[in-house]
Amino acid sequence: MAKVKTSFFCQNCGAQSPKWLGKCPACGEWNTYVEEVIQKEVSGKGSWKAPGTSTQKSNSPKRISEVSYSDQPRWNTGDSELNRVLGGGIVPGSLVLIGGEPGIGKSTLMLQIALSLSGKKVLYVSAEESEAQIKMRADRMDRENADCYLLAETNTQHIFQHIEQLKPDFLVIDSIQTLHSQHVESAAGSVSQVRECTAELMKFAKETGTPVFLIGHITKDGSIAGPKVLEHMVDTVLQFEGDRHLTYRILRTSKNRFGSTHELGIYEMRADGLRVVTNPSEILLTQREESLNGVAIGAMMEGNRPLLIEIQSLVSPATYGTPQRSSTGYDSKRLNMLLAVLEKRGGMKLGMQDVFLNVAGGMKVDDPALDLAVCASLISSYEDTPLSEELCLVGEIGLGGEVRAVSRIESRISEAEKLGFKKIVLSKYSVKGVDLSNFRIKVIAVAKLEEMYQQIF
Image (cartoon, rainbow, N blue to C red; front, top):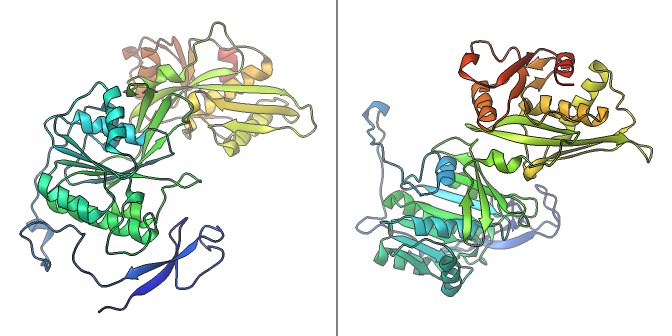
């Protein structure tokens, strides 16, 4: 009989220690270390084993020129946003982890995909909700899949028994933190259990070529709960973001072995499920009755997708002594840099002004191409002069007040033209080699902030 070995794990970040610690040296949390069994006698039950395979299997080294492979077609999910985020569709045999806050819509999104995969046998394993609760949610959606099966189970041994009988083409686990394996004696949701259950599901996915989607919880700081090794084991990590009190949700990729990690998908939460937003620029631009000062439109890129973002700013004299600098959805350090450039190169007296900056739509942006729109918004609020509603701005601002070139300028111009803008201000260094005759929108090329000020104010 093998000796039982234990260790202490931080339940917040997954750090391991041979002894108990009051404060975790990795994440700084107190009283999070719990003793867990890391090795016990293995009975061989509860883990996945492909039928007809032996437990001992060895591979021999091969020359890379001798390795052969075949391109497997991706599965179309019927969801254009999820297809884009995954890199073109579901890869057979992939292991995908999707995390998000409670109530954000993770289970709704996965149930929609399960109901949309017509012609595929889908097994939806719910360890958090009953089958009746899932059926109630499915009835609100206008989708049907006769081959979608529901299973309310938490034991991996029982789940794999049903998998061997059903042989599904697609598997959804909701959620990975609620499963438990008989190989580990720790409680469900502990570091050891999450790691062991994920390893068993990964082995099943790779040996059978069945795509597996795991729904994961997140910690209070927004990261996926469980050990960091969980994100290393899976092929793709998706983050479902957004305020649950608002209607729009954003699906981001933080890791993708089969595509880009810069893609983004936008959904609208409705009573009948999540609706795909095909043109997100329309929801990010506020419909106004009249022109307002402090509002500017900038063009940014999220992966290969151009988005038009509304920048709102408020500049007013400081009433309580020390001026405030507040930004929502925009880097506060970059805002301070742009304020210093406007004061030094533009002659604006912002030292005793309160500055508030907001990115409309709840987006969090980090594209430097929005610098020009931020500066125009600040100048508009400071001068109390509204900008034209037909104007869009693209450009990065340097410390010398110069307007620098940005990438993929043609995509940004096309997006602004498609949404009805008449003029776009950009760096004159961006238009080199670009055929402007292909666009009907008026292009205003500037080299410095002074030129931008003269052109639009």
